[in-house]
Length: 260
Ligand SMILES: Nc1nc2c(ncn2[C@@H]2O[C@H](COP(=O)(O)OP(=O)(O)O)[C@@H](O)[C@H]2O)c(=O)[nH]1
Ligand SMILES: [Mg+2]
Image (cartoon, rainbow, N blue to C red; front, side, top):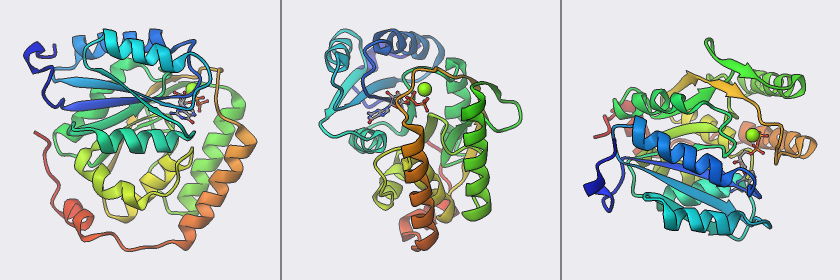
């Protein structure tokens, strides 16, 4: 149970929900997540709805939810881009652990505790949901399965990625890590996740993968051909960039901290 006396203090965890034209599911998902965090997480948790340029009723539903539910915030950005929404909401947050999850709740909510626990105990710097790790239960179309496996194979062979699933919409990291890492991440769209993880790995940060139970929602904002092209361009850019890690990140990697 969250402590009601702590409603105005900084939460331990901030879960950002990036949304673009999600009037259909926004209210149902936020209410389900709100109930879950209050019942299942033993620390103060905020939910931040981060909308970019939605043209439907998303903005008004988000504002109403923020006015109605405790510890639910709403931010609106005029320009599109999921990475932009995550970057902005994370950098503005005063929570010690920052997370995000897709609004369609494709990941089962009971995976949240397993995602956050290794960050709170200091066992890792970034914790990511994985549909390709042993123990994951995934229901999705053959097309998305093939694209996902091919893309992640490419990341492993070309960029030497040590993580299995770059694109699962379920990730968390320590706030200090986000503040140090995000200035090095340039992409503001779908490639943001990959760039964040590859940059973290290059800085020697510890990435922990949590197998998830995932049921794909076929209502998608992804334009697959366009996203494949921008992802491949992003991979080529990261291949060409091998900037050294800033000292702050190197020392975090060398001296991992427990989050209190
Ligand atoms: N803030 C923001 N969120 C976005 C944008 N594009 C997609 N999203 C959100 O990103 C999440 C994942 O999108 P979705 O279409 O389910 O992706 P898929 O599951 O990979 O097909 C959802 O919560 C979307 O509303 C965007 O431009 N801005
Ligand atoms: Mg989805």
